[in-house]
Image (cartoon, rainbow, N blue to C red):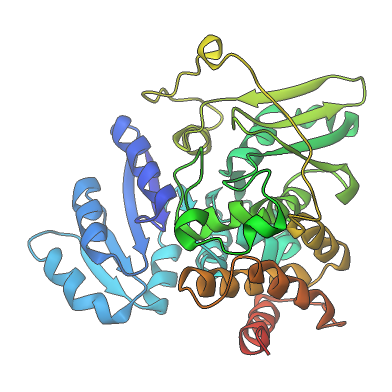
Length: 378
């Protein structure tokens, strides 16, 4: 039996992780559940999994959480310090699914105790890529990606043939606005932007898919995860979301991982690797599907990918800076304060705001994040 902690248990990935665990109850024991402010669901999950501790990042929700767990042996805690303390608790596997750079500190805490990290938070590697990879090696931790695209590459990239890789090819659904013109994108509403055609995701990630910023961030993440150069990371639009990504080898072979658009599959891969566990309802019917299509994307309509590539080229703190600007802009868009196309305009501004992007610690990263938060809309 493996012990598991779930960071971001009330979000989309967290809920799907719990579904996977519940299908194999004899294989997993839950240690800690961490969530933001949905304490009603957090308490329900903690009781459901008989977790040792449930933590809300929102200190104002402590009494509510404590009362919900009153007749159990489950410990309740709240606040940033409690989140880090829970992350430091011993568990074999950590599902890192807190959305945004808020997941960085607890994930790094778990890495420093040598945990196996199932990484569903792409912003961690975007913001602190080399620092994070170095800590994984230093502490004998392990990192298994949960993003469907990176999970696909992880599954088909032969570790004994790294020098034979020509390219890795990330697939993108194209989001809800594939084929739209700039004019059509002018008055997009938050409701339209979160209506992804294939995946059931949280609001922030859904908007990132609509702007294609998610694919830009995935390029940065892939650069840190896999033994390739920036130029070896390609993107192709694949509307069906069945081929999750591909590895092209020098001999012309292209290996792809296929599966239904169901996040339980990459979650199960990460939790059980190197073994595989059965999950319900995950079968792919290729005959019913009929065809798979692939197409290029228009960078003049969706410039987020080229912005992310430029940030990766600049390096240092720049990926963290554009990620922070994106998080702020998406939140403002979801609140109706800015328009859809303003999101990428705000992100692009960060490319020209700093020339010194070197960093050596997590404190440097959070200082840069604070600077962007203070000046992103000036």
